[in-house]
Amino acid sequence: MLIIFILIIIKSLLVFLLKREDILILCHSNPEIIADHITSLNEHIMGLNEHITSLNERIESLESELNDAKEEIRNLKALLNQNSQNSNKPPSTDSFVKKKTQSDEKKSDRLPGGQKGHPGSTLKFFDSPHEIISHCLCNCKYCGHSLLQTEAKDYEKRQEVDIPALNFIVTEHRSEIKKCPYCGHINKADFPENITKPVQYGQRAQSVAVYLRDFQLIPYGRISKAFKDLFGLTISPATIKRAENKCFHNLAEVTNYFKKQLVKEDVIHCDETGMRVGEDNHWCHVISTDKWTYYFHNKSRGSEAMNEEILPEYRGIVVHDFWSSYFKYPMCKHAMCNAHLRRELKGVHKNFNQDWAQEMSEFLAESKKYIDEVRKLGSETKEEEVEALKERYKRIIMKGIKENPPPLLSGIKKGKRGRPRQSKAKNLLDRFIKFEKEILRFATDLKVPFDNNQAERDLRMVRVQQKISGTFRTPEGADAFCRIRGYISTIIKNVMSVIDSLYAALKGDPPIPE
Picture 1 (cartoon, rainbow, N blue to C red):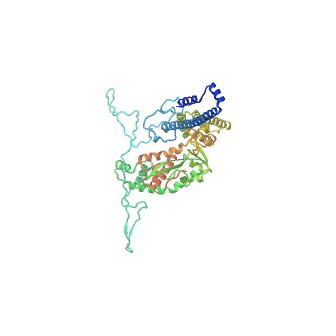
Picture 2: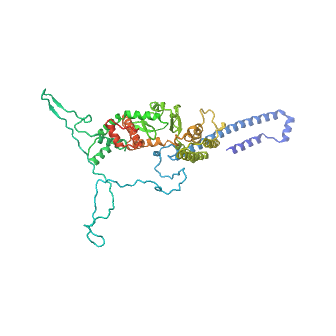
Picture 3: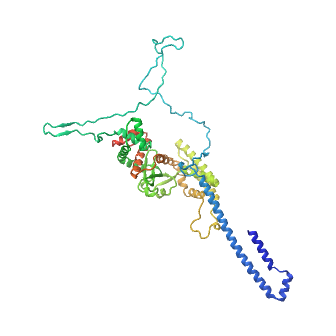
């Protein structure tokens, strides 16, 4: 199109061009004609210049739109390529199409299966079996001679571990009724406080129901079916719910104790996940350590929910992802989940061909390996080695800046308000620049872990519950689940019996880990 236009311009100019002899004759005979001719030619050239300028502006506009379209296509391709392995998307969003996954870690030289020295988990012999059955040898297998009167030289032992037929026991409580011979008043003995109905389930049966509901995450209807199949008993969902509510109320003081203990911890882990309550989207938050777990749910994902809990009074180190609400608590220190970052770096390297992202991912992996070795030896990190890590971190950042230069002023559309949109790679790079101290805190403070796996593990069962049972019908039901599940999680972390602890909780005396 541009070439055709240039040809038209040349043809137009030829009309106005005169030979030298003709110009000289005109200059001597009539100078006014030459002046008019030149003036007309200048006006025509000015018009052509304006048209060329207009075309140049149009070309620049089209090039800008083309660049925007290319960037959008690249972002859309990157979005399609995102999964739980290269972004912060949860595994539940992955496609069912099986894809090859490439691990960031180098392949180990170890053979598959249990390694040498691994204790294993096979059944071991019991010292005191409940029953011993002797299998007699009557005749010699070689000559047929009777061995009935021959004393056994030795025994070969084999044990079978089985479960007895499940059954239930019925305890009948009888309250004596007596008439006073002196005044004639009819008296009746008191029943135990927990015996309130003519026929009811005992606390052991209730604790099993709560265990199946809040630990094994089995829906109410299936618990009823399990009781029928296992014990021959018919327990209604309403009965299970009443037992759950009783456990919820009896654990109120225990939950408050957990919160106080978490406030005292040097390092805590925080995370949140979606929770469906009725027809609304709520959020289940977790604050935990390797010893304590505290769940709470709220309609808000951000500081509106967090302000009512532990973070406003906490002064230690909080490990979390880059959710902005956590940074609204400046009185505590922050540490980032580097597992999240490595997944995002993997996606940026794959989808945007950013070499700095690959180098940063390798740097984080190598730094983790070094810090793990230091922890294993029980020593402290050397200051010069930490400084060397920081220097390498900054060199990678500088490489990232070179790969993501700021946009040229000529590339910014005139009249467009706000900052120009940045690529996903540039946004990630900006985070690494702004939060260097928080990202590297695992290397500068050995109390801080490399990732936020503790909170993610604690939230995993909440996601499983949502997949199995779906929504909670009421906020009260969600509250009950959060409190009981937090108690069960804490009991497991402290290697205590879940069934016995729930049984004690239903009696009103829940055990508390020391």
